[in-house]
Length: 347
Image (cartoon, rainbow, N blue to C red; front, side, top):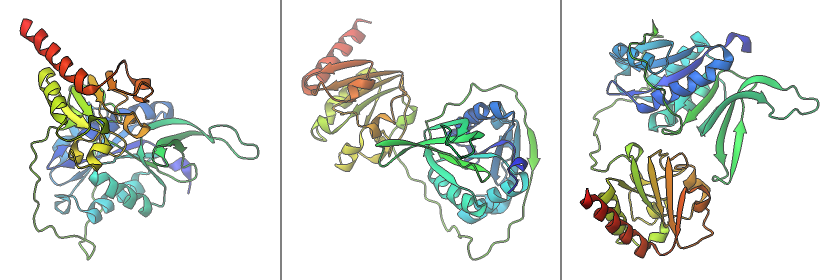
């Protein structure tokens, strides 16, 4: 493999029902940052049927080029045709870096494609940088420059691993939604659009979709919430979440929770914050009865303001909190709710 042939930072621009998923814009923002030291272009790979009109929105969020693979076989996501499309783009255009969102689709597509193009893939990255590998010089080992350094939690979140792929291209990573930040859109931006179709011949690996049933949920997406009132095991019971719901209602927030709450069956997984849940960036995050294990902190530490309420003054959550209250949440939270209501009534 001639590594010098591989140039550019590519982003798989996921779309569902001809709507670009938010993770695609987040990855384009990170791709712009990674491309700068490499003096490279950012290319979005848009796969689907009748999706060419979506190219302009990708340009507004940082794409210099958009490769469009448009075919009726790509109307709905299926592993085989989509993997064929993305792997063919990689083999034809030879990108140096490929980023994929760690969504349900991306977690299926990314590993399949990396295996087909014979490269590695680092899953669920939380940090991406360009740098030297090994990180520190090792006697007798060449230190390679301008490598994609992919950082992710390892061993259940108890340590952080930085991984590189120095001998194969492209360097591939999946990134969870909410971890990277999209840029401010550049209104009116245009990208070079390249139409490419490797040809699709259905075979016995093509799944036949009989019916698509969309789940209906009245649960607010916690990733979009500006204020989150999050409860942990320390809340005590599912019934006790009523005091958190009252606080959320008073301040216009949304209730979320830790993994322990989901594992106990108190709340649905859609509301889980953390390494195995969702990554959130609200303006205000209330951590109530949450100890602050690294797995949870990884999903909320980028919040603008963190308020922790816990009876254990040594709880790790206080290490990341902007404001901390040590005491019984059963007394503190209702009092806080009443104070907020009283202030609002004055206005």
